[in-house]
Length: 521
Image (cartoon, rainbow, N blue to C red; front, side, top):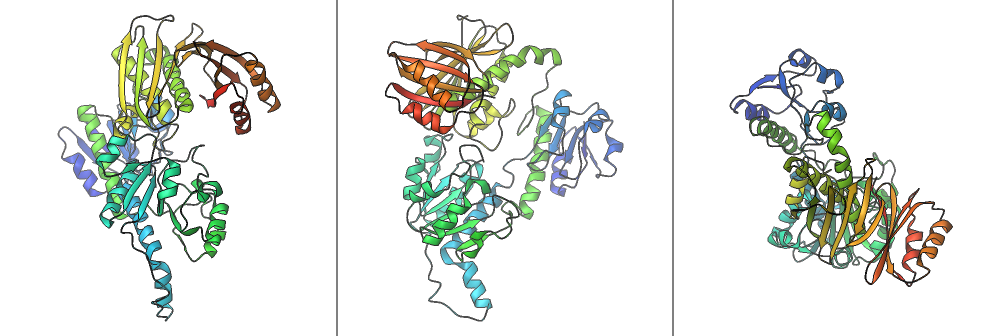
């Protein structure tokens, strides 16, 4: 099998491939790689080479494209998917670099290293001015316990720090094995002397460090951000630094990059670097080696790791399967958005004629729907199950006989608080329909923006729900009701996003137990 290295990767990465049996390695460059496409079964690139439709057209034997790095904007993913070519990247390949940068930030904040260095270089000798603090016996709060967050915890522990973390998608048992105590966000804010951010940028995390959350933090807290600039409301952080509530901040990322003349830079206790957390020689070599290993394992053993697109299926198979993949993903999104608490396990139920292959794809579609609400590493049909395992989330699958609707799918999330469940089916017109929520039958379109309301089964609720939505400029396109023994459920399809104000008004109703805005698009 011919492996074409079309871009500059480390010699160690080339050696990984050359050492593998049955692989013929062709080392080229961005100017000449097209001469070798006809027989290439794998292509390795970084960012210089563009893998465009004409490249795929010239490479009829191509099975896999490996990107040494995270971004895949130089690879036409749609074209790759249409041709059944797997595209892989290397998320986490720079995790150690980012973790070390975060620890360096903490040390610099604790000892004012940046200020002491500048003072000494200016000819001063201000020993008393730079009285520092030790990390020993301090509490580090890690927000986001993925690969980088775990690496930060691993390195902070030898400093004698107590580690607490928040991540609804990491099990308490996995964290305990690593010497980490899982807590709620409010508990983390109240306990942490240092807060290090390692979460994806989502609607839920955007601006999560703001005046309200800072007010819940300890006085003198220090904040480190090597994740995404938009996680922090810079104006609110500026005010907290001015007041002394926040004793220091170290930022590698910013809301706008480059940040220009940020007001934050007027504070002596702010350290700023130009988004270099993952930029080390070792990290660059590491991503090359990792992608070489991934491509090798895929070609020789069929192992798929860190793929960013769909698996290879025929057009006929995909046309038949696609509605069920859509249904499963939307059910996952729906249940994820109505749930509370740290996720423990996910249970999938299939009723009908699903082959093992189809069930596996459907499982991953549902998992992706759940996981993508919170994670930066995007889950898809290939990698969702692996991501769940990495996070310590249990996944189980159950088959049962035919139900009220043929070929229905159920998704159950078990959190530390309780279980949440939704079931759906594909109707003859190909549409995804919701069939039940938490065991209560309620049939509704499963698409776009929705409202889910649980309430006491008493008169007047429906009218008030409609009035509140109308007063907030929300148009209802479908209103479905379900009744259980002691409560009722409304699944409402609306034409636009439901504002938080409307949700607050709904939950203020005496008869309403819970109201959730859901977007399954």
